[in-house]
Length: 339
Image (cartoon, rainbow, N blue to C red; front, side, top):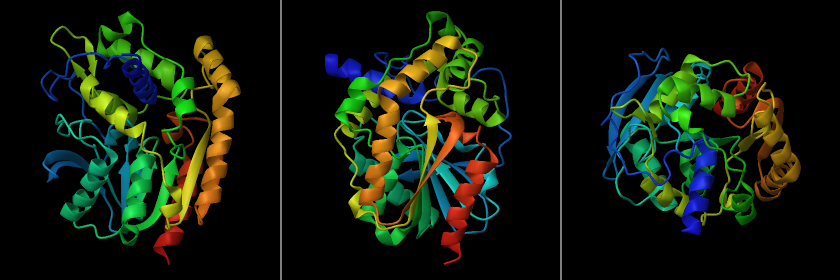
């Protein structure tokens, strides 16, 4: 029971919510979404059957080399709605919801790393992508590391976007703070959005991409209450697997870029309790862990470039850093495409 609670707390922090923990599994699409809304991001949404499951893919187009974006734990490909269009002029940009996430199928299992990497391999096959650069955000760094180690001939370059952390570290799992919404934040989608922005994005402007993302990782019950995707059962399976799946950076031969934010939780925020927790977490543990993670990648990966971006946090770096982060990623990937 204690292990289950700890795993649930770790998974929850990756997305900023505990509302999925311990709740019965709900089927994707079984409940209605909030008020009618159209995602303006210029992507095509489709479903691809791989490895016995149907995965939801977003395709932003582009005629250049393939770039596949992989989201974090309990997230969805819409987390890239703001980033992807800025890269599609030079790359064919695709993202997908891993099994159990977003609007992809959520089987009872398996959810181990071997299965998730096989899903990625088969997805590339189905999309006709023989070789690609991979960008992983947060826990997406797990899949890109393992895939690059197993299939080096299918990888051009890797981008670790706030993903240069080995989440299997036992001390990290114990040190994670717990963040959960007050009960009133779960009464409606509007209330939940307000809490989510405050807890995870601080003063970062709310974009249409973030709106699409939040809508994709929530379901609304008949009474208007918010439920999270994935379900608690899927979360338990994922965390149990990933907590014991350390990264083998030494197997990676592809050139890599790892991008770190300045903090994990928002510091640029008017919410004093969030700011206080962020500073305490950084001072007590996360700052040192970030430094150790960066040093480990530089020791174990022969071709890694490390970049740190001030005034950004784990989630807001996807939208807040704007041109500086995008320019760094473009420069790194463009050099690869010109080889």
